[in-house]
Image (cartoon, rainbow, N blue to C red; front, side, top):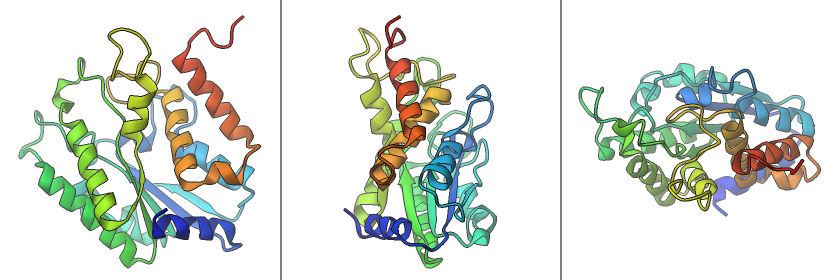
Length: 244
């Protein structure tokens, strides 16, 4: 357990109202691709303020579609600092990694430094940073995102070097797709709405992994939210489940 994870769990166990800021790109923004269902930020909102009973907590989504790590740093006050957060999550990289429509192309070293700078700024606020790798991508239909794995690794590298809480969504989506049939390995069928935006089941998978890493599931073992999300993920992985 990292010192930051211990601190997050201590904050959750306390009676002090917390402010959670979740930021990133279109995946965290959570529009359109859930087809009217809740996105992962909204699931966590319900878990924290509902099942955990932390009604005075505030859960804020400041993500913007199309954004990258460097853009978030340029707008750090509005995206993060102005909200006086206690916990800040960042999931980024899906746009940063493209080598086609960005000019200039963002190099992995520059991306890694942006992630490290984000962590430094969050900690300077007295808040706890939490880094999320981006989900996997259907590279057949989004070949311009072929560097997504390398950018996810750079986030892991920052987390390991700077002792940051890491929610490895890229690994979780890879694990989800394993064993789903010939030709499906590495492709998260059932949890994507297009080549790289999670659908409703994908957002359920994202929320479950955040809850697991932060220990929210252990604090709410009878959570109706988590039970519902787990069912959605199971159906996405096994479309005939449960049997008729």
